[in-house]
Amino acid sequence: MEITNYLGLAAILFAIGATTVLLRRNAIVVFMGVELMLNATNLAFVTFARIHGDVTGQVLAFFVMVVAAAEVVVGLAIIITIFRSRRSASVDDVNLLQS
Amino acid sequence: MTASGAEAALFWVLAPLMVLAALGLLFARKAVHAAVCVMFVMVGLAILYVAQEAPFLGVVQVVVYTGAVMMLFLFVLMLVGVDAADSLTETIKGQRWVGVLLGLGLAVVLLGVIAQASFPPAVGLAEANAVTNPVALARVLLGDYVLAMEVVGVLLVTAALAGLVLTHRRRLSVRPTQRVLAAARVAGIEQGRTLTPLPAPGVYAQNNAMDTPALGPDGAPLPHSVPRVLRIRGQERSATAVLAEEETLVPRDDLRLIGVGPAPGTAVEQAGDPVATGTAGATPSGGTDGTDEDGEVR
Image (cartoon, rainbow over all chains, first blue to last red; front, side):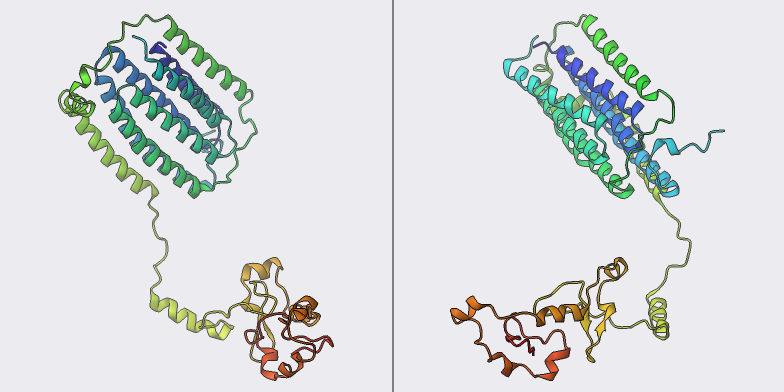
């Protein structure tokens, strides 16, 4: 098995995450799609670190994880705030700025 | 460099399952099912990290993603309401097909690039991990990327503050103290409210359920001993129906044959106690005790 198969898996997971973001309406599920995309890039980082024999890729994956954790905190807080005022977690209902 | 046979087996078992779970995120109707699918993908990724000579990242993946991030997701799901159904009406015309097309296109482009690119022969991390993987990571993290690490620390503090500020709710009215609550309770007596706890539901010889009211000292059923929800739903049973049901009981023959139950007629001596008639808790236990064949009860 070639090591590049891991990259193929990462690409498929990334595409599924992107499709989730495009298709689903529930804001929480959309957010989970974003998380899936971040995880797929992490897998690519780890695989490239192995290909090049350099742990810098793993360090970058570590940074992605930290930033994703911070992003989750803020994003979920925003979802809760919207849910409190509109009683809905659907991304379609947030259209106050629409003319 | 090609992976070893064991690693190939691990990959080919795990990768299809992970893709299936990721598709579950895309197709699951309920958000909780999607969250469980994502958790499976994340644990699978952790296993793949360990297989790819990144044990530290594998552990961090389990701790941070499945342990913290997905738990946070589940908490918010519970807060928002688990059964908040996803609407299936299209607000933008043809959005579904365009989305599917874009997703497939992205997959094809990415896979095509990976298939076309020529990678250098893989080195492997055996040399870089000679000082163990966490030490090698720490040397890069605290050497080349020390400024980025500090900035990330600031980012985490900011995010925690943002979470606090965004979910903070200002109290609109004065917080009631215990004294105020006590005064309100006493003032409510005139409207028929009680100071004491409400009476418990009735316990009868054949019936011990929340839906049957207890009997007061005067023998009248107390409706407020039944939970309010059951009363509003109309699922309350009347005490007289329960008592009438018990009156129709006849002693079971088989019990009498083996000498466990009372012989007919002996129950009459236990009957006639006027105190036991009205009170709910004082009825004798065991259905055959209080009845005889004449239907004369207690």
